Image (cartoon, rainbow, N blue to C red; front, top):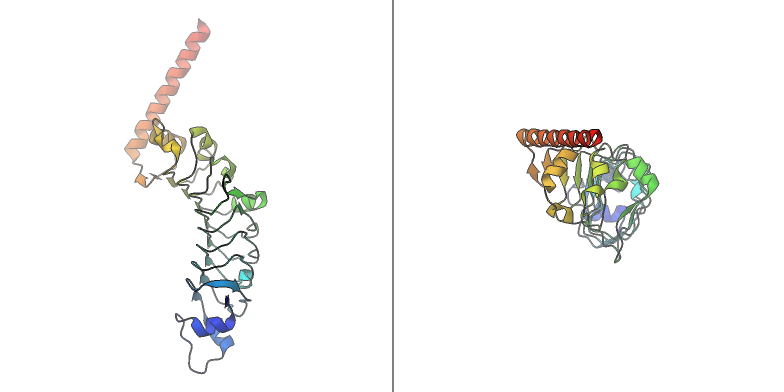
Length: 261
């Protein structure tokens, strides 16, 4: 069993060279970026000696817990993709964390992040979910992230609606590819609320095949600059907004006419 310990870091970290006769504690204190990907690591010991560590790469390992990662208090970027993590725990002390990568794990619920008020980017794509289940957000974490999150990746998680994420009003980028969104009403409440959303990717959802899909999404979200990897141009938006206004005017006239009759 491979454990990430202070001794292991001092022995195997080739990206920050250790000076001749340098004490272990002094060396660990100097490290700012730690590359420990693809090492078959299954457990993590206390990392408090790495007091200046800001970026930690632990993707492609065999971790099933996030325990003890909270001891690296100054982390800003944490890469945990493609492990066996089934629950987020022990991260509440990472007050400086801005980017968290948890894609390709075994999470069913996004939880335990309610104290991370500096988190700007969260990637939880393609979880290995039990049959028939979709990825959920625990209410306290949902409320906390709504005050800080600007980039979110929830692709490939059997999600059938964005309505539960409506409170994420600071979102600038959302990737929600390869989910199970089938109709516009599963998108409308969120898209009309997210006034800062610039980039949206829904590729691989059934709704993408609906009539006038692109036109309707652009009209729903006036702030969008890119949809499914394709830029939205000013003239395209102007035409669609004019079309919408004209259609609404005709509808009002028809209703007034019916009322008068």
